[in-house]
Image (cartoon, rainbow, N blue to C red; front, side):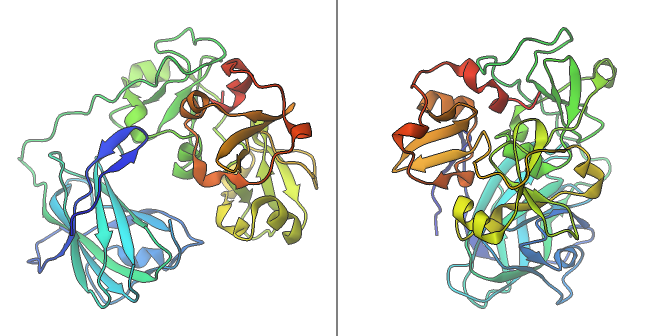
Length: 374
């Protein structure tokens, strides 16, 4: 089956077909460890690491994902073979391949046949991959036992060139430029680490605690520029980046209280489930993100029991889009939505009445707090 082309973030990615494949067992070709999970949607996620052993990580919802490390010095080459257990018609997955610096190299995916046990996703890239992110493309249930590369990087083989990365567009509005080596709003990392930082208008570097926070701002790993460790050290470490306002709802593990995140990481407690449903729909729980206790201190207490949407919320009113601001609901132009890197997965369907609307204009400066965290 030939899958369609995907257009993600303005970059055209080829998606290859899944096909049955009886792979020869090779040494060290299997994924070593799960480095990131969506625990609310994956059961027993650690079971996806290692050799096939009949013990599975279970996908139970659309957009559930895990990211698997193939291992240092064991970078994958060729197609990715997946040992799976498929239960229903329509179960499918989307795979993104990354290098050691978490720069995306390519994608692929497709639909599993019921009863399938081994399938492979075609890899179109030329560089060896270190990490693979496997996302469920539907709500159908299936399970993953292990992943393996067709072959692996071995000592003495020529290493792929260091990816150059690219700078975030200078056209994106920002409240001033940093006085350092790169412009404010640039995402940076070093070749020795996969940690990504945002250079703020305060001339400091701000770390992203995890991938959900990074992607909530609409960023992509292809936007990251690699700089030297010396240049990185010239920037003082600032506050960590928090979830983008109007996207994820957040909570701390072992505490049932759920919060909406406003500007500057302000937490607004959603008092009841009825209130959550009224604001975010029946599937509101799907947008709840557990924040580690280590990073909870990055947020601040806002108004409790607020009866208003937080600024930054995207409204879909019959395919007309608005963004909530302190003044009210502002019409969101197509150019603004593009510059905002808007993730419409977090949109809220509601009718925006005239009394809630602010005068329409196209001043990007009014939306600066939602373009960049700092």
